[in-house]
Image (cartoon, rainbow, N blue to C red; front, side):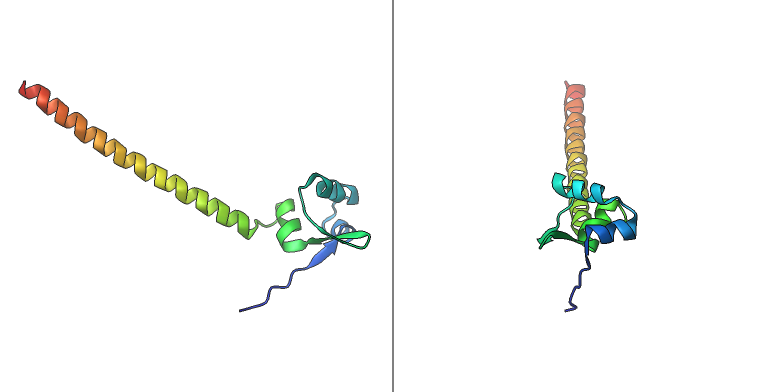
Length: 102
């Protein structure tokens, strides 16, 4: 299995690399929009899992899996409704046939 190496950046490095003001980064941290680990006096942020998804540069794997799961749930609901429609249609056809006999 391949080891995953994450790049950790502090707020000043993020500011320089992505041209996001330091205060904006720290405000996002305070508000919980991004998570970081405090090491000494600085916070470190995971570039791939936290910063890029926050900036909309890359969707996180967790978000992709969440969207796929939601998509599958919706597909299952559509199939369920299709089956219910077929059953109701058959029932109405049967009742219509019974009414024509009477």
